[in-house]
Amino acid sequence: MPGLLSPQQSDDLIDRIEQHFDRHGLGVFAAEPIQEKTLIGFIGLNIPSYDAPFMPAVEIAWRLAVEQWGQGLATEGARTVVHHAFNTLQLPSLVSFTVPENMRSRRVMEKLGMTHDPSDDFDHPVLPPGHRLRRHVLYRLQRQH
Image 1 (cartoon, helix red, strand yellow):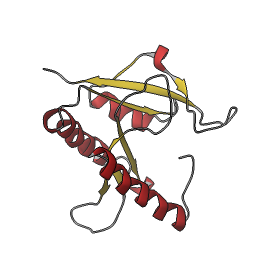
Image 2 (cartoon, helix red, strand yellow):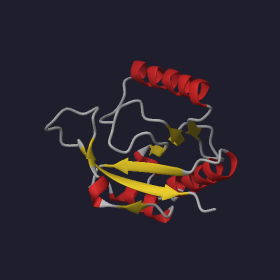
Image 3 (cartoon, one colour):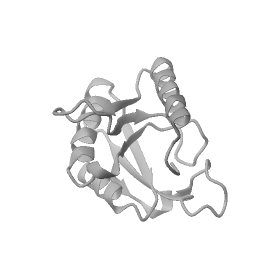
Image 4 (spheres, helix red, strand yellow):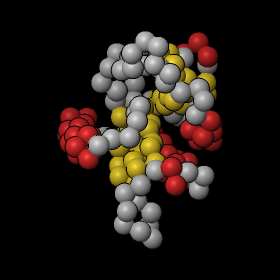
């Protein structure tokens, strides 16, 4: 976000993902269809490195290639990640966020049982004021005991 990455930016992202795993013991996983060994995106957990009103928090995140959308892959992968976060890592809660217009991701969040309170919506601090993607909706999910 907010756009496609160059090959160098992709390499840098992979380095940051590996460092995140080393530092926090969790991170985002490469998403590959079983029938193919092709990287189609990522799904996993992230601790945002910026200050935001909802921090501290662990984010459940996904990003898939557009040709993979609409197949239920984000929902399936995210459900597995939620199970891991709550049952293995014993995290108390998760957040997820996106731009208001991203109805596909918002629908995944709803399928996971996440809830949205408009008072939690925020301006993403990584994007400059006036950027068309700056406003974000925040969803939350609490572990059930």
